[in-house]
Image (cartoon, rainbow, N blue to C red):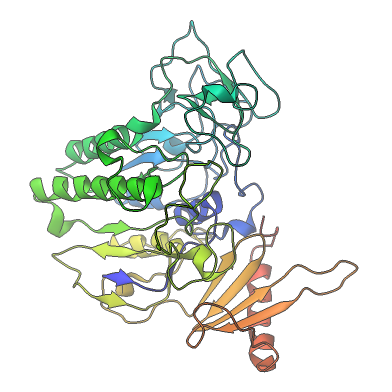
Length: 436
């Protein structure tokens, strides 16, 4: 079942992943913006989460891939036990990239420890000042195999300069071209290990994220340069997961969901040729904007649900959000969401399984500002001009103008009033700390 109106809650990764795992809009909590690689864990270990809800139902839970939700409680000792992290918020097993591929430290963590860490070569990480003597992209551009287009000019790892400084851990550092294979191997290993019992795997692939460095068999495999090549690699990754489910005869009884955490971006800090090699491809299709923006291209996600033994193939235009997964999976496993948990999550299981044609009626979208969807209407609240001056309001009729090209707020003052009131009500629920 392919959904045409499915959304992440935010147009950037940390807040959208926070919402997916907690069932709470990220703009309700401070510290859920795009995090540096040494930020503390932004999920309260006491709050129920999507994986802990499934743990309670007897599921083995695993997190593999990009994390970027913070680790520890403050200063992190990368050479010892690193917690709290995924294992403290509901995952029995974790094999993760601590933050993102373009941020240090460029190492994998498995269940609270750096993979391949060496006490004689301790890892130091800083986002405030240079540590160690490793070359940087700014100081030694001649050492780079991929040059930055903006920022991304600090410590060089594997010929690519990153955000932040790192020293040590020479044998623990990843090779970007091998990340997809490493993550896929561990994801499949988790499935194999738990094939005889209920399991939940949160597999956050890295392929399309910068720096884009596909494995050798995918280089040149697309007609859109390196950005197309890593999408080919992503397709292979998904295929490996499905093939494993098929081989283990688990496919008909496994609900598989494919989605993303924000809209598309082409140049995201590296001069990798992605812009000039688009070859006519429009990453956001008919939608305006992409990653970082409040437009539909920022949060409207690919979202495919597959379970051949239960879900009928087709297309659904029901409005759903990843924030609805905690409540929906609780319902799927016969549970009630604990009081106060997942406050913004809705049970849309009927729509996910194809039994219902409708789901949400309203949804808040987040970028540096907030927007509200109600049916086909979309209201955007721009920031005020200071001194109590209200910000500009925009209203779009997505049924007639999916590209958000014509602001019709002047013609529909009644709709603007109603939707402004609804958005204000959402802000008032449980507090509002701002969209950043």
